[in-house]
Every structure is written in structure tokens, then in C-alpha cells.
Amino acid sequence: MEYYKLWLILLTLIGSAFFSGSETALISINRVKLQSWIGKNKRLSKLADSFLNRPGDLLSSLLVGNNLMNVLLTVLIADLIIEMFPEREALSILVTVLVIPALTMPPTLFFGEIIPKSIAREHAGRLLPLLTTPLLVCHYLLTPVVKVVHGMTSLVLKFSGVKSRKPEMIFTRKNIQQVLLESKSSGLLDEEERNYISGVFEFSESTVREVMTPRIEIEAVPRGTSMDEIADKINQSNYSRIPIYEDSLDHIIGIVHVVDLLSGSGSGEPVIHPVIFTPETRKCDSLFNEMRQKKCHLAVVLDEYGGTSGIVTLEDLLEELVGDIHDVHDATGSLVKIGRDNSIIVDGRTRIDELEGKIELPETEYEVETIGGLLVSELGRIPDQGERFQLGRVRITVLETSPKHVVSLRLRQIESAVNEPEANESSIRPIREEED
Image (tube, rainbow, N blue to C red; front, side, top):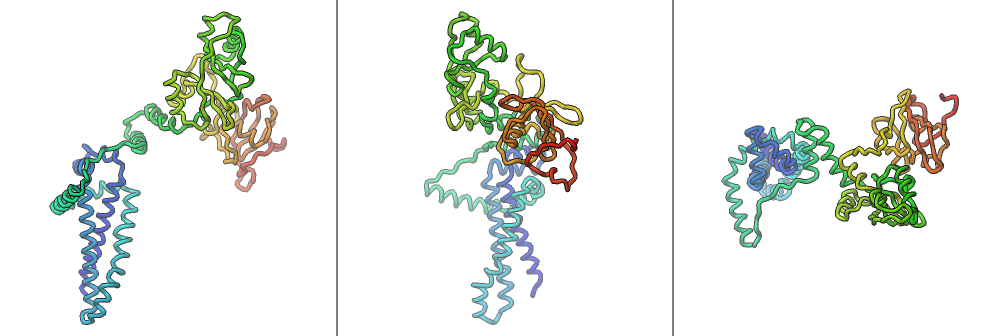
């Protein structure tokens, strides 16, 4: 046996892995990342420019090279096996038909295709800079063959009536999010700018339910209320608009604006402006566009039964998009305040996701959004003021409640031993006096 043939087989297998892996890496890599390479490095610039402007040429070179390696690998293995059976014609035919394909396919499939393509797909950004030089060399050497292949392909496409067109660079959501991640390390965008852009993506995914004012907090008046009474209600609530309903909050018919009260008489009925009705599951961006088109400042959010679940204003949607908008009537206090003993005092309306990084709440079976809602769901009732509970490794003290909801709570993270069962419990339990 001539051992140099084994080395040739190994080299062709490596060549096959190189071409198939390079092809997958080029297809998988982020187009924005490729664009960013232009101008940074001569070799990377050439590779990026070649693929972005003439992707067919580079991919054709890789396909031709890969097929050449696979054919050469088959020939070398066939030559090696037939050499082992030089005088047995019948056996040589059997080897040619059965043994050669059986010995050629596994290494070609696994080491020449599956493994390199899997690695290249996951690490395209790191592999391509390392493969740039051999890629460009192979592309240069195989260009004559590629031109012949392209010529034949063009003829076939022409006679079949298929028109080829230059591919366009399309920026997807994933592309832009990748730019945001890379800008953090490069300093291209500051923190505030990144937050604004990220807010746009989150806004399109957020539902109206996540930003609405819940039904229990709606300040509204029944139809027939005098303008003087409405003015008093607006002054007490610090809102510039107030909903008007008939019979109950499930039948809101419109809103009254504070401006309308300035021009009307104290005893007459005010002008009622129409509102938009929308389901809880609607996306924020869709509602925002409708409210802008209809020049409507308030929407009534409906639950699955058609009842009023809450209300949402244009300001609520804008704050979800760009962050908090300070208003002269806004409360100056935060929904989350730092208390004594490393505890935090929270409003019952505080969203659970806002507490991430401040307190470690266990996962529960209840699909609720606020900390007050979580406590009520766990207990099955409105807790009394002063009651104390433990949920996982968090101790909860009820500071204030109303007949309808939890107003404020004190939360404190505790350190528990691993063998203490309550440290990992996801259900709530009352705290005994001796545990203080």
C-alpha cells in the first residue's frame, strides 16, 4: 500500500470541510457585520465587498471547489481499494458498486459536510476572518471554471425565461438588534440612544394590557353629571380628561376634556368626545397608529367578555415607547422606594418585572403582572394591613390595603439555609411571631 494516498485522502477531506464550512459561514453571517468590515481590513474588505455585491461568484467558487474535493476523494478511495484486489475481476466489480460508496459516503457526509457546516453556522463571525486568505486564493484560482459555469447557467436561464436580478440588502429586526449589541462595545451609540431604539422594538411587541390603567383605578363620572361636579372631579384626580359612562364602567360613552369646561356653563352638560374601544391583546403600535389617525387621546380596553378592563391614553403609549414623560400632575414619588434593613417599599401596582435585580421572587403558577396581584392570587383574598408572609426567600409586610386592592408592601430578601424548605417554596405562608 502506498501511504501517500492516505495523506491525499485526508487532505481532500479537509478541503471538502473547508469549502462546505466556508459556504455555510458566508450564508449564515449577519449582513450588517459584513458591511462593517468594509474599510477596516484590506482582506476582509475584499471578501465582504465580493460577497455583498457578487454573492453568486463567491458561492459558485465554493460549490465548484467542494465538488472537486468530493470527486477527488471518491477517486482516491476507489483507486486504493481496487489496488487491493488487482486480479479478481468479479470482486473488483463488487467493490466498485458496493464497497466504494459505502466507504466514501460516511467520511464525506460527516467530516466534509455535517460537522464543518454545524461549526460554521454557530461561529461564522469568528471563522470568516481566519478563512479570508484561503477563501480569496481559491476564489481567484477557480474563477475561470466559475465563469464557464455562469455562462452555461445564463444560457439555461435565458432559454427557460427566468430573469436573474441583483440581490438587495435587507435589514431585518435581527440585523438592527445585532447592530445595537455591537454598538455597546464600540461606543457608536450611547446608553440613552440604544434605549430609545430598543424601546421601538419592545413597543411593537407590548400589548395594551401591559400599559393600561386598570379598571379599579379609573376615575370616571356618570352621564348627566354637571360641569361643576366634573371640574371638581378633574381637580381631585389631576387628569386633563375624564371618562363618562352610562349605568356602569362597562358602558363608557366618551370623555370630557378640561378645556371644554372653561367655555361651558356650570350647570349644563359638557361636550362628550368619542373614544376608541380595543381588546387587551392588541399590540401597542397598532393602537398608537389608530389613535393618531383618529386624533383620539383615550382608548377603552375591553376584556374577553366585552367589559371594561381599563383605559389607555396616548401618553401611556408614548411612555412605553420613549420612557417616562414628566407631567406637572405626576406624583414625584417612585413606585419602588428603598426602606430600612435592605428592604424595599413598593406600590401594589408595581409590575413584577420592574423588581428584577432588586428582589428575588420565585416562579408561581399565577399569570399576574403586579406584585399586589401576585399576593392576592396566592392568598385568594385581599390581605389585612399589618399581615406578614413569606414567599420563597422574600418576606412581605402589608403596609396598606383598600377593600379592592393592595396599596403598598414592604419586601425584604432573606438568607436561608439550603436545607430549609421555605427557601425554595413557591407558595406563600404566614410568618409566625417567633420567626422575627
